[in-house]
Image 1 (cartoon, rainbow, N blue to C red):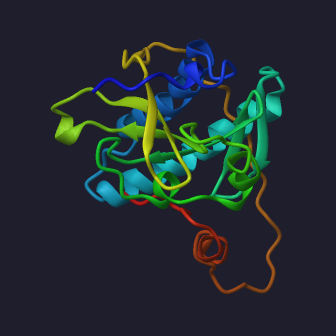
Image 2 (image 1 turned 180 degrees about the horizontal axis):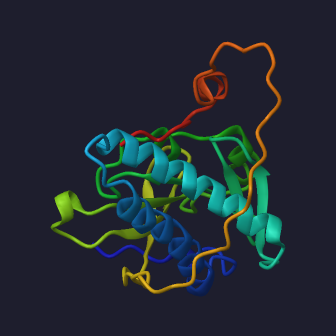
Length: 206
């Protein structure tokens, strides 16, 4: 069964805008795959780094103010951004069998939009990055729309063309970093564990 596209329910969710967001998510996925190749890297380090970079990329694109249609409702690791006013989340998951709360759950920042959804209309949207099973398939992004009770109503699927980075690309000039003054040591703090405990989908572990 072929589902309608999100644009058939809301013209703000145009293919051009969705592909732009998908490109950001895929670029960070591919860059992380290229960077984390040490023997100490595994699916967990790659997955958490990918999610963190994707989160920061969307945040940076919003802060750049280069995309008038891109808005932000929640900048935490349970990020909710908007496309033409439509709240969206993102997750690295299996679009056809999702397990992450970003896809299955309803964030409070999505609730006001969901309250206006009519019967048969999507109440929540999530970009789902399919990384490709063990490299046997090309990664791609789907934007899925669901009703409040979890019925899958629409889907858009991205292009999955990878832009390889040139080995001869000019690297940024190095910047001298001054040593910080010595002072009493503080106990180490786990990466955003306090924030993670308060959010629905903090690190989006693989």
